[in-house]
Image (cartoon, rainbow, N blue to C red; front, side):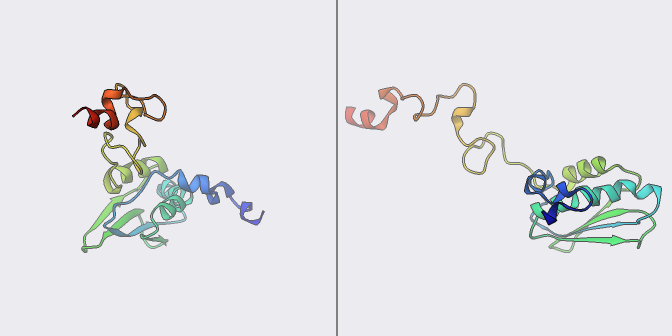
Length: 154
C-alpha cells in the first residue's frame, strides 16, 4: 500500500487521526506554529508538529493550520480568534506532551457535563449510571412505571 510508506506511516491511519485529544474552540479560525528546524530548544515543537499536527487538522476541519519554519529564534504557537483576538503560547524548550497538555487546558473545547446522556454524549443511556433502573429493553419495568397501565387506572 503506497500510503504506508515513509517515516512513521501510522500517522496516516484513521485510528491514529481519531485518537487526537485536542479539539479547538469554535471561535478559533487560525492555528499557527512557528519553529526552527535546527536547535535544541525546538525539538519538542518539531516532534509536536510531526506527531500531533495531523490529528489537530483532522479533528478541526474548519480551522486553518499553518506552520512557519525558520522565521523566529524561539518557537511559539499562535491561535487567532474570529473576533480579532489572538493567543500566543510560548513552547520554547517544552516537550511535545507538555505542549499538548497546555493547549488542551487553554484552547480546547470543554467537554459536556458528565451528567448528560444521549446521542453524542459520554453515556448513550442513563441506565449506565449506578443506581438507575435498567433499560426497559433488557429488564421489563414494573407495571406501575409503565404509561400503558398507569393511564388506565385513572
